[in-house]
Image (tube, rainbow, N blue to C red; front, side, top):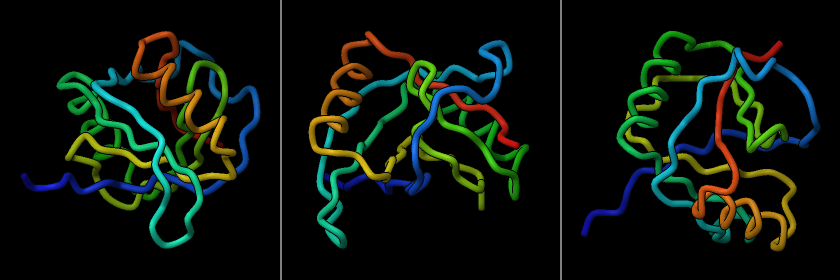
Length: 123
């Protein structure tokens, strides 16, 4: 089986706030899990978007190449990437200063649909 190409979306610090919830694009999650980055051995979250999430991410990222975005889990900003190219494959990897416990908790909540994933333009 061919492994998916993951798009690393950011290495950043998290904070509360940012775009109003109405300005965010909701992204449906098919699967999410904590893994270790092979280069840094740091915990990261791999996210597979569902069909709708993949289409919304592709459209959002294609329209906003070169701009800063905020990726949210609920109301927490977990990544602040600059969109370098359209994200078409539906796979994201969130890399930041997560503890193993934090990364696992976010992944479980996304996988179990007890948390929401969304994206919005940043500042």
